[in-house]
Image (cartoon, rainbow, N blue to C red; front, side, top):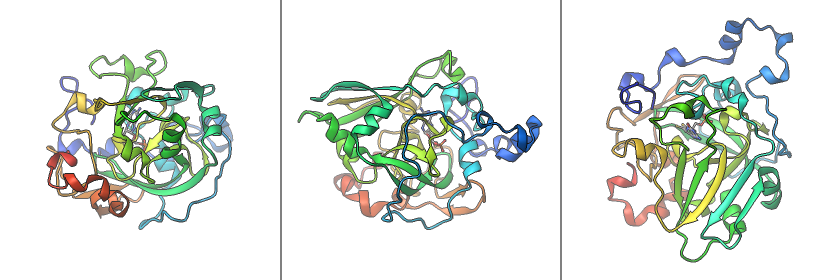
Length: 318
Ligand code: MTE
């Protein structure tokens, strides 16, 4: 999903997990010539300024991992946030994002249309919890992290969708003055993702406000992002500013750029390769372990019912 000027959304298999852009926090800080004492709050990759409170939240023991939790520094310095550029090393640029206040619009086919600050919205969605989830990027890197947040189903209930609403169309902010990537006109900004109401109501679908027991760092999608652990990571849209309930299947950012490669469903499946690389294995951030990729990223028992009528359809995966 990296940039190549002529056709920016196309990369070769060799570029999928480029080690050249892989920097851990220590090497970044060394490169900046910063010593421990100089690491004032604003300079750390995991420092935030959001007003959402309640960290750390109690862990929900239902979700366990089959692999170690990824090192916090790795997960907060190797991030995809194209609004701030196409490299993984955008955490300093993302600090320009102002997340307090942060308005979220809920609109479309709902009884409770509302424009509300993210902190107030969270207040209406009940207590937060922590969940350990695997995360599998379509680029074949993976991590395992503790997210803090609330089930997305609570937001659906709060919005009170009409009987005809079938999908959630979810949008990120659009501000090229803050986010340099949004000055790159060949991308169809703002970043948009879409899921069905049934997917949003699935107990795994999570609205995350934090990671590693702390408020969400900006580069990971502050103040509020989606986490859909059974789908490729690009569905987990960051820094949500609008959620529209609709009866039209939303066109997502990556699907609009390259429909043959990034589909609506995007459920993790090692049997269907990306047209330009294999999806059979994944590289863990931090350890660089190569693990076999599992269908639905290992969450089949929770989600396969959603797709039982579509099992033979290749489009289910891409
Ligand atoms: N959301 C927005 N708004 N912009 C993005 O570029 N990248 C997606 C997803 N959400 C992206 C986004 C991709 S490709 C992945 S793999 C995950 O965020 C990465 O989440 P992380 O950087 O917190 O690991």
